[in-house]
Image (cartoon, rainbow, N blue to C red; front, top):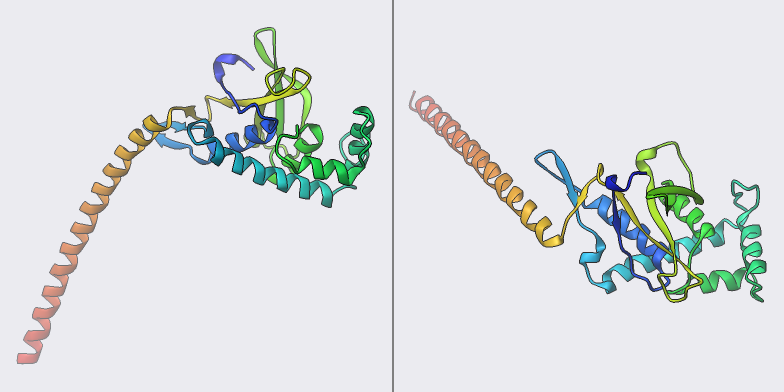
Length: 232
């Protein structure tokens, strides 16, 4: 992907970056509004860290629940979620079992990877694609999950090294296409769409006034007709 077509949005570096990236992408999608033929939105970076973290924690809990309920779900590799978790535990030389893995993943600050991306994709019914910076462009890497053929449902995230608590950990951030919406500061967003709301409100008021006048005229006509009939 050409960098000029993408908006790279930073994400909190506190170990919850995967969940922060997904919730931020969803937030931007949800708050897209059109003005003069162009779509605009704003990111969760404009809100408090507390609000953002709450959304991310809600998603994390849904992910852990999905994993717990779908341990026999087969991945594209042919392995089940159960197999993937066990492989992860073996690779990290952890003495935990699957329940321990899920209990740990349910806590804030625990890094999410391919297993959690699979769950996210299934929960949202959206493709998740991960990119790295390579040769001055964003190049797709194997990390991610495709659940349908609808490219419009793609959630694009950036994958990088050494930006969070430990240099050995990876970091996720948002890549949002300009073709979907231009991300602007919340203050500008509110100003832009407050004007539109006022215009719409004025138009609605004019329409209502016209309707009211028409109704009043019809009521008067009916009233006159009824009065004439009664006199006869």
